[in-house]
Length: 476
Ligand SMILES: [Zn+2]
Image (tube, rainbow, N blue to C red; front, side, top):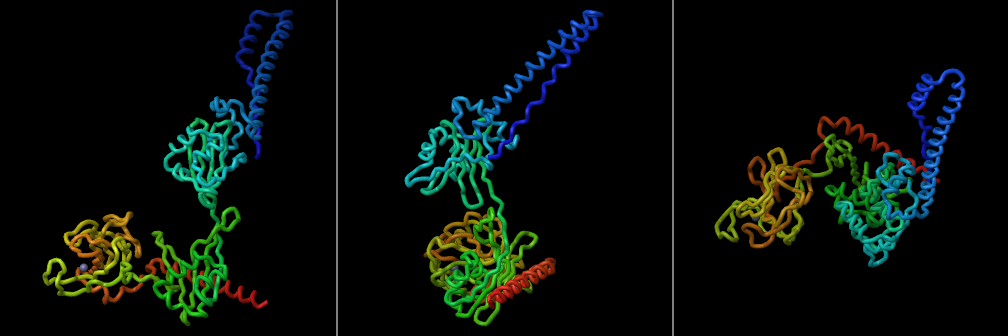
């Protein structure tokens, strides 16, 4: 640990006023021969005063230095638990940051003692091993939000603790490769907590694979991790059927982010550009984030790879009622139009928004039961009825994105069994969701087109460049 010696206190200003006062008396009462004697006297008094001051200061300085040695070398500090106040004041000098509110500098401190959680251990037991009482545990639990991270410990977990003679000074625990939770004693005696995040560095990497068997096995052999392969499947999910349509000799090449912390690779980030050759057809995608922060994948000419609407909002077992202008209602036993599709599915099956939109209605609606209506713009709206409940993050007026879970299948309202009743309206007219031509894909908006195209050209040429380099190096 680097040690920063405290600044030696500056020589005390021997109070100017003392000299001035003596000087005055001297001028007033002593003239001639008495002058030398008084000068001597004055020198002794002033000199003594200065010496006394200096020695007391250096003594004080020595004391503090000694304490610093004790603290930095982690030797015991006597009666620390009995006198946290004194410790609080003394340790101030060893702190690299004078403004730090904590007893130790959490990021440079080296004295942490590591405790590995044993099977069946609770936090209280870990603290006990560190010589700490349940009072410390209570103090930590009093921290609220951050305490929850550490309240449940798992076997094998490492917790670093700093304490002195039963006096808790701090602990830290790694939450993931980037985040570490710190709980620290402040100089004022109270506990504080924060999560420190290490800087994440990203580097763009190239990968490619020829598919010999499955996408995932071939990807693994080419050292491309599951995160990237799953993104690939998601990006081209609307144009390639990954369950049935993968052929030997399909191939892909991809530019993606690799993430590092302290120079060590911790994982992968986003796919930036990708080309997938499937059954003789080439599909390309570029990642683009618009000025509003919405990210999507587009073909290099700026067309979205997502359809504006999903074909179905739910994973269903069968269609129990079709769209018709006339049908006998199963409960009302009257001839009634059925202006939507009924998808039979178990209660609780997630219901997804078929397109990006805003929630125009959320609540109970007569025979529809619990219902959601989404407005998608261009006078298109969709309705989801008989829900058992709504998803957590939705509410009237809120934005939802395509594929987002908005509710769950149920049988509320007039329904004989759990199913989703789904309607599409265009210009106020009900349309059959099963035969309606799906709205075209959404392109990158015109104002951002130039920026997108420039970015796409750059990424696609980078992809080509990496491939050439790799092919050239394979020739040797
Ligand atoms: Zn229905």
